[in-house]
Image 1 (cartoon, helix red, strand yellow):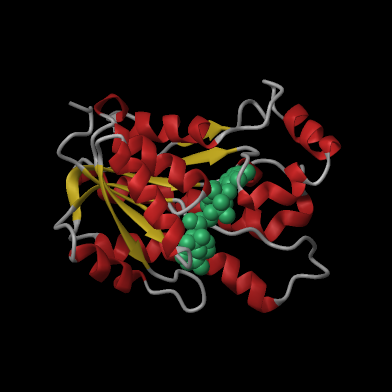
Image 2: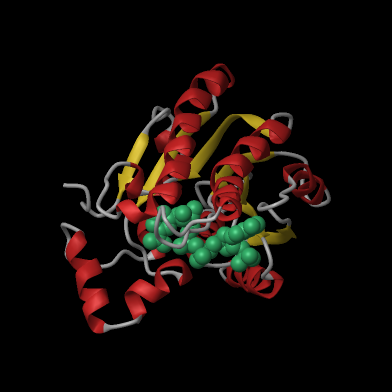
Length: 250
Ligand code: NAP
């Protein structure tokens, strides 16, 4: 029996990329997983099928988290399948086109809506569904702690806001035994980074060189860290910013 048997997890943005990796890992560990998606229902169903193929249990729920997003609608969808959540992973996120000189107010609002506002209101509207002793993991970014790509500052700002949310929320929910942490990936091979990584061999090599370990990260590298925080072993870690950048900030 998996270490998360009997627990229910909700992973936002689990149709693709890091969220999918996290959902599959939590599913393998025995949790029943709510696979949230934005637009890609087919991809979310593939995540569900992958979890079921390893003997796990999962269901897909779709809601928009951008402009306008609807965190309450997400929980209403969730309620059709389950009556409480033990592990909430706020992973859904988007990047921005580069440049202070280029970014529009609409794009600024959209990246803040998905990356910072949605996690806040998902927690607010989910307070009654979150079970005592549970876990919240917010997927941040190494860019919240380094100015190596300053043209991505609006995106980095959303992650800075998310990190403050993790820190303060850990105090608010601590009395209920709920831990709250940020996990910050470095460069991971997903659709988000496809242009950087899969444009040229040089791009891949430059990205690999950012990590002290000399390679580009895989979704499993992040999922394993989240799985630890979600497990009983992670019970004493809260209010933390967990560097999962493969040594990209050293
Ligand atoms: P990805 O492959 O582009 O996947 C993004 C996920 O978020 C998808 O499941 C997508 O759902 C969902 N999503 C996006 N916009 C949404 C919206 N408006 N409403 C609802 N859902 C939405 O991204 P990723 O690279 O895995 O990134 C996942 C998280 O890790 C993000 O928070 C990102 O900032 C963070 N991160 C990534 C990296 C990296 O190198 N990849 C590095 C550091 C941090 P649909 O496809 O169904 O619409």
